[in-house]
Length: 235
Image 1 (cartoon, rainbow, N blue to C red):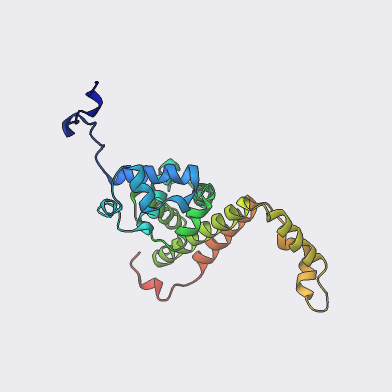
Image 2 (cartoon, rainbow, N blue to C red; image 1 turned 90 degrees about the vertical axis):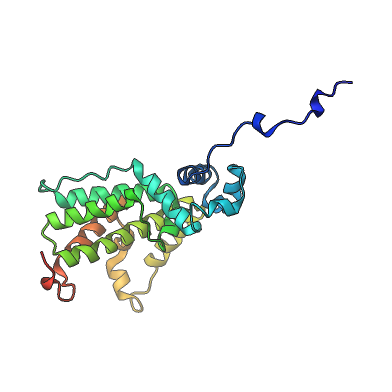
């Protein structure tokens, strides 16, 4: 009788598992995100993929929110976050920078929705913030206005990606757009005079055109709107 298959295997003869690291956890989470969606990125699922227990993961990431922030930071590694503050086209650079951020999030609408309530703090995200500040300051925006303005710009970028990315995923988007267009077209001039007067401008323009305009509108508002006693802030 062949008993070789029944022979105990020493632990030393088994292949060693890769060391558990934060980078490895984030990379695995991104793989699941790309293949199955963010809803499948759970601590239990990650533990299964990494051949460990869920409790072991909390040594490297405190919670799912921190994991989402780390995933965003890793995805931002592919974005071009470099800026040239010596150039006169600081506004166009700012638009390009935010548009690059939107494209990253647009590819993952579920992550964009999560980021709406996150405060990421990874190195790539900090580079994005620093570059936005540098461009605003290059355009002469006062220090406090620049600091507060970056928050508005990032919120606008994330909300845009979350809205349009989510709608792009929905099979009902075209029907919803058609229903809105019909409601605007058939609106009563007596009840909704401003809607009738504005007409198709409410839904005109492409996504990039509206994103560009929105960023420019925010930049102008940030530059021109006083932020309490911002002149007292050291320049």
